[in-house]
Amino acid sequence: MTEQKISDGQGLGIAGLVLGILAIPLGIIPCTFFIALIFGVVGIVLSSIALSQASRHKAAKGLIIAALVCSILGTAFAMFWGLTLGRGAKVFEKVMKKEFREEFGKEFEDAFDSFSEEMEDVLEELEEDLDDEADTLEKNLEEANEESDL
Image (cartoon, helix red, strand yellow):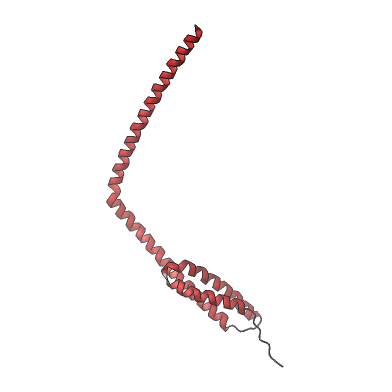
């Protein structure tokens, strides 16, 4: 009698292995950590499902465990770079805000103040022009009323 090999979960295990293998180098490179994070998480999910299927049907688990390890490694590398770059961005932002305030803070305040004063002057001139036009319209209306009464 020949023994049948049960291959439950092997397809998902191979898919998880491929994603895990891709996630490792992408996770090591700082610029591609986000893609590696996606590949790693999907690889972990596929490998976990494959492992549960293989356990249920007492199939081979070696490839599936390798897929799970590769996916976890790739995800760990990606998370390391994500956290490192996130912290670095926060520090950079704080330093740049401080430098910006020290370097340009007074100049921008002065420029904003002068701009505000100019805008107020322009608005006052517009208001005066509108008042003059309203007075002119009133006079013209009164003259038109007087002419129509005659």
